[in-house]
Image (cartoon, rainbow, N blue to C red; front, side, top):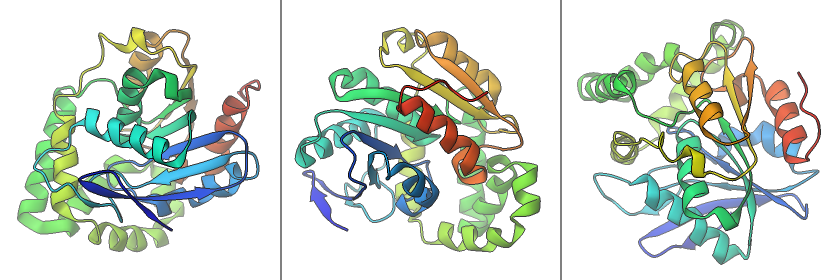
Length: 267
């Protein structure tokens, strides 16, 4: 799949499906486009699906800085859409991708259709800042392996850790391939994230979903998004943690498809 030159970065992207409308999937912090395989399979019969690696992720190259501002990640998405001739897109962002999606919604409202925010937050509070410090210290002491192990129980719910134990080494190996400087620059960009006062300005039809075992961005963060964004709806996915689209794709994708197609949401 191709790269597109966005100036100081060459952005890796993929397009799947032949639908008239586009859904853009925005990665979590340590994700890449490969993590969306289930969603591509479920969404592409109905929509065109755009995947991309943001600054600091996967196969996108360039833009080596100590901090990647969230507003610039949103700018990159807007420029990518322009280069691809996509005037308007629905957006499904998980965790870090959900944060970037909020900035995109505020900076480029005319380019946004529906907005799905999964396992994410509007405000980097004291707990999130403490987690940031722990992750940085873990990497400095034990590299990628310790960082992965520290985040494992924060990222996944108990059911996934029990039933998908054989996948953990695979996920750990994938994490080892992530360049730490890019990940850290993305994390630094989140430290000052606080859109609490601006959520009221998001006009896109919005669905917020969260796993009921999400220890990283727990339910109170999802409720803040729901109450802050006019008309936003909230659904809680039972038995999953912070990586809901990976932990339970059937439940998440059924909700997402109903939402993006303008249908009644399953309970």
